Each structure stands twice: as C-alpha cells, then as structure tokens.
Image (cartoon, rainbow, N blue to C red; front, side, top):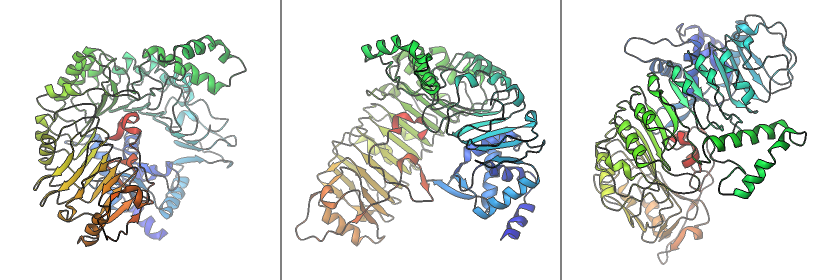
Length: 607
C-alpha cells in the first residue's frame, strides 16, 4: 500500500505535488473545506492563472485532479455532486508527513513534543500550547502559520511581529483562543500577507476594529473576520485591490450594553473603570471593551452585518462579499456594489434600511451579471422585516444558483420565472400566498432544493401539479402554521427523494406520495402532526421504491388520527440530515435537528 501511494505521489504532475503536500498542514482525519484549501494554495503561489481561466478556477481544477487520483477523499458533497470538503486517508497522511519531514516542508508542533527546527522551514503548524522552546529558527523565512488548539510555543514571536514580515498565510480559524485587538493593530507589518483568517471557531473573537494599516497589505487576497465585534470596515479596505474574498460578520449581541435595557446599560458603563483592575481577568477586559466599542459604533444595531465604505468599487477582483449592513452603509457605497463585476457571492442585511437604500441596493444587484449566490436578510434576532422592495426589480442576475430570502415578500415576483439556473431556494418569513407561488417555483427547470422556513408560505395547501418541479430532489418545510395539506399530483416532482416536515399540522395529511417514483424518505420532525398516519405508512409500504417513514418522536406524538384497523409500523429516527449543512450531504452520519436552525439569521454564509 505504501509503495502504491509513493508511486502515485511520484507520478503527480509538478504543479500538484506542492498542493498535495500542503494538506499535511491539517491534522489527521481533519475535514478540510475546499474553499479554505484553494485560497491557501493561491496565497502560497501554488496556483497560477492561465488564459481563459481565473485563478480560482485553476485552484478548483487542481482539487478535482487530486480527487480523481484518489489522493484525497470527499467528505461532504452538495446536491449537485460538487465536493465541498475532503479528508486524507490515514495511510496517505502518514506517507505525506514522512515526505514533508524529509523535505523540511512543514514543522508541526504538537503538545509536549520537543523538536529542533531547521532554518529552511517555511510552514509552521501549532497544535496546543505546551511546546518546548524551538531550536534554531529564522522566523523571517516562515511563509505560513496555522493554529489548532491553545496559544502556541513560548519562544515564538507575536503573530503580527515584524519578524514574520515574509508571512503569506495566517490562519487561526481552528485556534482555541481569540486573536486580540492589540495583535491585529500590528497587522500592517505583514506586507506580504495574502491570506488572513482570524475567524474564531469557539464563539466570537474580541476584535472590534480593523486598523487603518490594513491598507498596507496590498497583496491580500482573502480576508476572513467573521464572528467578531467589528461593525465597520475602514476606508483603507478599498486599497486592497487584489482582494478576492471578504468575509465579515459580527454578533448582534451587545451584552449589557443594550439600549432596550437602559438601566443595565448605564450600570455597565459606570462600572467600566473596574475592568482595568485585578478584579477582572484580561479576557473579560477584552470582551467588555469590544462590546462597548461595537455598541457605540453601530448605534446599538442588532444587525449581523458590517458597514462597508465608499470606494468599495475599487475591489474589481472581489468574488465573495459578506455580510453588508445596508442600513448603515451610505447610498454611494451601496451603488458601488453594482460595480463589483466579478462578484459571485453576496450576503446582505437590510433590516431597518431606508426605502431609498433598499431600492439602490436592488438596482445594484441587477448589475451583478456573474452573481451565483445571493442572500438577503431583512430581520434580526428580535423582529421581522420586509423585502417587498424586491418587487421593483425587473430581474435578478440570470446565473443565480442559490437564493436565500428572509423577510416578507407577500406576492411572488414574476422575475423568478427567469431564474433558469436556480438550484437552491431558502425562504423564511416571506408570507407567500397560495397559487402563484407554486406555479412560478414549479417552472424552474433546475431547482433541486426548496426550503420553506417559518411563515415563508401562508397557503393552506402545498400542491405540486403534474409536470411541475421537474428536478426537485428535496423539500423541507418548518413552521408553516397555515398549512393543512401537502399533495403531489401525478407527474409532479419525478426526482423527489426526500420530504422533511417540521412544526406543521397537516390536518388533511400528505397525499399522493405514490406519484413520487424516486422517493427515499419522509421525515416528520419536532411537533409535526399528520392526519391518518397509518394510511401514510401503508402508502409508504406499498411504494415501489421502498422509502422510509422517519419519526423524530413516538408515533402518537405525530398522529392526528388513524384509519380504523390500520397497522402502523413506523421507523424511528435517530439520525436525519443536519441542516447546519443545508445544501450538502455528509459522507459520515450526522446528528438530528428539529428546530428551525438559528443560523438562518446568525450565519449568513448558508448559501
């Protein structure tokens, strides 16, 4: 086996060998996101643009080549069959580690393992905190720093030290400690940085502002500052003209600095001097300071978006932008969003925005001809909002494949008929009415996933007409309080594989599953109740594709009434697809979820 792997490695083209070895940065059996990996390859210079192809496309092509050669294994695949993340087989990982040790490619510093580092090491990976002092180490030669676990070796410089001036990639996404504001204030020293990921995986980091020196990072291509207290991007961000990916989202929680709790807020402010005394540890001090700074800067807004500055139009290479707070962004900057001609993914929050800003944003969206994924949220943690201004749009970008809308629409806009490339739709709070909604959605030729979250549909019946939804494979409904009946007519949804229902009361039942030839499962989640559950089970048993009826709870908790004499044998459910990965299928089993996902508001990267 080892000889076979070595032979496969030796036969890799020269451009794939460094891409393959770079996987050794990640721990054994680690789930590696494709986007993260490709961004890092590009930052390291392993991927070069070619005529007629973008550098991103070349990176994804390299990823596919490694897959086809079985050097990596898919771990998450979306509904379209696209691999979103991968793993490395244990044997391949061991061989890969032995190769980079021989070539001094990477130094990995696990807990309690002393080691001497050669001067020519370029990539350092830190696992945990209990490291011995490093041997001879020229930090000016280091090209990447990646963290897994707690604070790293005591003899290393600060992550934003001038000693690391040649650093190209800094990745703290899997660190178990938060990057501090003091550290990021020195980010301007890292002139060669191309990849910066300071998203805190354990909650929210205590970052509350990007320093103006961020503008010195002229080569920066990917910036991830999600899960922070940063509410405003500095004007210097517009100087990063090589930026391809800008991911930023913040918490909407200000702690006790909440305008809805004036007394608690006043007491917290009066007690602020105490946080600089020994009564508080440094972590509490950083967190309290960050919350106050954010509350003041965003004027106590509970939006998860950030304000983008005027000049954002200069980022001509930008392909990913999330999450924009339309309410706090000025009209000029919103107009400039329409000039981001390479943009493929855009997430925005419009809650509280003026009608002028919303209509300006609507016009900007229509100019983004390359847009593939669009998410618009008009609600926050406390109250719903409206998206009715979308009705003024003549169209949306024709190449859209993923669309997420959270907020009241009322009447389904006619331009939806033109979204021929649409594959996934997520709707919540839309209050769409019966009739026109299903007629328009039903003619979309490539729609595979339809997610109807609470109050997205206010009709009493969800009817799938013959010939409608030709490619639909998965239907998920939750919190549709008005819904009484779900019916599939002959010839409807011939590709349907999964129907999941949560928090619905179907008093007229589920009718016509015999017309779904590819059906694999029907799942009834928390608080779902269906009339004539026994009859439904009989239909399932008689179905030629042998689907499964899965229940989240005991059958009596889901049954509104049985057909007399029916023999109900319902399969219990211990594991159903995890909606934290909406569009994807995990290769390994996932944990059941029953509530509407909290991320529908708090994690706008759903699409």
